[in-house]
Amino acid sequence: MKKTIVLIGTVLLSVLSAKAQFNLGSLLNQAKEVVSEVAGDALPEEVQQILGALLPEVEIPGTWSYVDVAVEFDSQDALTKAGGTVAAETVEAKIAPMLAKVGIQKGAFTFTFKEDGTITTTLAKKEVSGTWKFDKEQEVVTLGINGKEFSTRMCVNGQNINILFKADKLLELVKTISDKSSNTTIATIGAIAKAYDGMHIGFECEKAH
Image 1 (cartoon, one colour):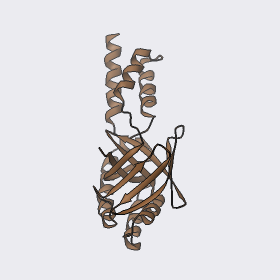
Image 2 (cartoon, rainbow, N blue to C red):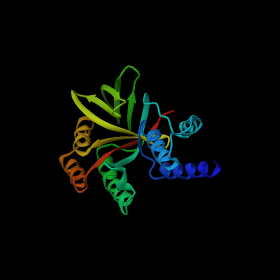
Image 3 (cartoon, one colour):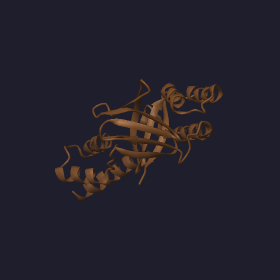
């Protein structure tokens, strides 16, 4: 039994340390699946409780402030392959200055998700209001801003969250919320995104206190 517990612990640590970006609500299931395969049986309730206690829980409602660019590939496996992490870091390094040109930088950009399903994005002094809804089964958050819908992946990143978009939707959102957006900047971000297949780009945000 002791050997099994140690093995479960080792596998769990490998799942948690692979990359600190997981879809809301899916991490526990991923860990359970991996550990169940190793243990060869259903997990005891005590083990499930331990897993639940170890995994991060993030409440969406509240104000989230932009910290940095976030990048995620469609397949989590891509990030474990040689060069995957380097590719993500390369994209982040290239896109961060482009977003800064349109005003999206640390301390200047926030999302406020309210319990009533409304949302306010604040960029510099410009506020844009809309709606948001969370599809728990699909793990997708849909934002409604200026009559347009933006489907996002909402991912846990330690104590922060990553709000991720397909490249074309990110560019559309930037045009909607920023008075400084230019065709040149938008084209540059688009060109960078096209160089990598299956990639979502967005914002790492921390909860405002």
